Amino acid sequence: MTTASRVQEHHGEEKLLRYRVGQRIVHAVLATSFLMLLFTGLMILWQPLTLWARDGTSGLIHRIGAILFISVPILYLIVDRRGAKELLVESFTYDKDDIEWFKHAGRYFLGHAVGMPPQGRLNAGQKLHHAGVVITSATVVMSGIFMWYAKGNLGANGLALAATIHDLSMLALTVLLAGHLYFTFVYKALSSMTTGYVSKEDAEIEHPKWVEEIEHQQATGD
Ligand code: HEM
Image 1 (cartoon, rainbow, N blue to C red):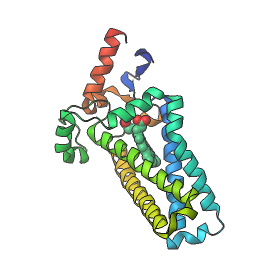
Image 2: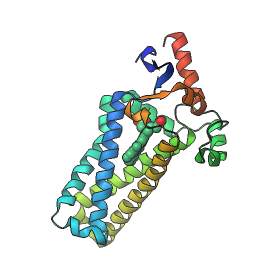
Image 3: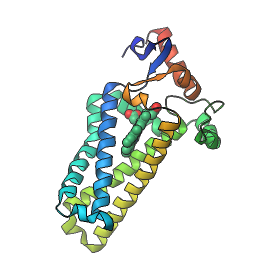
C-alpha cells in the first residue's frame, strides 16, 4: 500500500486510511457471526425465548454462525496478513503512554480526547478491547467445540464446566461489545469501518503518534 492512497482529500478535508477493504470485510463477518451466535444462543438458553428455538432453526443458525466466527482469523490471514499481525501484536503491547492513558481513561470515557496522553494507531482502551476479544473468543470457541464434538465423552461435570466457560466468555464478549459500540458512537468512528477513512483532524487528536508515523512514511516514501 502506497502512502499516497493512505491520505485522501474530500471537500477540502484531509482523510487517512484506517482500515483496508479486506479488514472491513473481516470485521463485518466477525460482527455478523457474533450477533448470530448471541441471539441464537439466547434462544437456546433463556426460558422466555426457548419457544423460538423449538424447531431447531436457531441451533442450525448457531452452528453456521460458529463456523463463520471460527473462520475469521483464517480469513484475516488470507486477505490481509499484515493487518492481522498488527492487530495481534499491538493489542498485547503497552508502552508508558498507554499506562498514562489508562490513568486518564475517565475523561476519555466522558468524550474528552483532547489532552489525553499521545496514542498510536490504537489507543490503550482499544488495545485492551481487542486483546479481550482475542482471549475470550478463544475460550468461547474451544468450549463450543468441546460441546459440539465431545459431548458424549465429557461426562456431566465436564459438560457443565464447558457450558459455564462458554456462557461466561459470551457474557464477557457482550460487555466488551457494549463498550465498543459506546466508543464507536461517542467518537464518531464508524466511517473507519464503512469507508475505511477517518478525518486527519480527529486522528491528530486521538492518535497523534499514528499520524506522525504516516507523515514520516510519506516524507521518506516508504
Ligand atoms: C455490531 C456492530 C459493530 C460496530 C458498529 C463496530 C465498529 C467498529 C469500528 C468503528 C471499529 C474501528 C475502530 C477504530 O479503530 O477506529 C471496529 C474495530 C474492531 N472491532 Fe468492531 N464493531 C462492531 C462489532 C464488533 C464485534 C461483535 C466484535 C468482536 C466480537 C468487534 C471487534 C472489533 C475488533 C477486533 C476491531 C479491530 C479490527 C482490526 O484491527 O482489524 N466489533 N469496530
